[in-house]
Amino acid sequence: MMSDEIKKGLLGIIVDETEVSKVMPEINSLTYRGYAAQDLCEYCKFEEVAYLILNKDLPNTIELRKFEKEEKNNRDLSKDLYSILKKMPKKSHPMDVARTAVSIMGLEDKETTDSSQEANTRKAIRILAKTPTALAAFYRIRKGKNIIKPKKNLTMAENFFYMCFGKVPQKEIVKAFDVSLILYAEHSFNVSTFTARTITSSLSDIHGAITGAIASLKGPLHGGANEEVMHMMNKIKKPENALKWINKALDNKDVVMGFGHRVYKSGDSRVPTMRKYFAKVAKIKKDKKFEKIYDIVEKVMIERKNIHPNVDYPTGPTYHLMGFDTDFFTPIFVISRITGWSAHIMEQHAANKLIRPLASYKGSQHRKVVQLNQR
Image 1: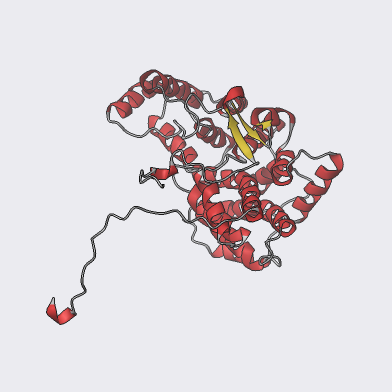
Image 2: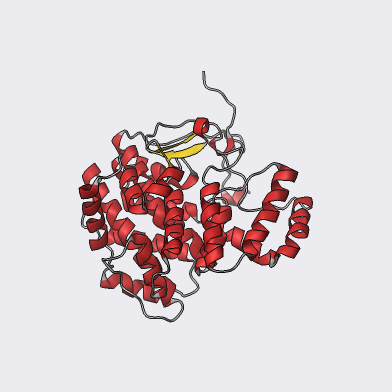
């Protein structure tokens, strides 16, 4: 017998199985294919983790070289896509640009209609390779600067810096960026991933599913939170204002972005790693202001509400210190999460059932239609 209890937001509902990732409370860690995310950050680069998520195991040297070569060879965009990016309104949100660019990639891809595991893997790599190029191109276009084409002798992290700024920063900055990509790569059945799986369940294509996932990620309750964290820090302005600001926000029952998580109740396991690299970037940039604000706000949130930060909290100011515009924080998230979305899309295809939940109807009871001239 079915229960009539409504689980808003599917809270606590298990809808399917996955092999991609899991939060393991016993080791207090998010794991990708069984590997702790913080260990992957220390011992691997993003390309290795991307391979792991898509192919179920870490690559050996030959496998990694082949994967990297395929990614690098697919970085450049078509002339048409570059032209479309130039014609987009300069005030467009970069998330909308990312969504549109991936949709156009689907129009151009020769394998769009083939949803086999092999074709989807190839398409996933192409989307992973091209999306940073599209975003970096728009980053420069809206500033009135010339587009910088991708290079094949740089890692994904190095190449994104190069395409945005025309140069690659010191290796510690690149490492911190790489770590953020690893930490953002995958997180089980979050809202954007579930969106991708729902779209896939109708047997739609991978470009369509990722386009929908990007639209879902844009929201401030999901990926957009890292942008909101930076807006909050900019409102606080300086460490001396932080204590008064956060206490007033809590007194007013305002939502404080970058805190709390549907899955983690006693702290996001990704935070300590990202916090460490946030500190390294702040030291290199000789700017400790945001670190000081961070610590004060975190302390009050834990003391007054017992709510811990999530990974968006340290990531926002880290990207800011790297020189990225605030509205580009979530698009960087997209670059990374393409891997997780793609893995889930392929998993959904492998054992598909149309996702079609029920709703409890609360509208009007049966009514008779009366003709217009009698109303």
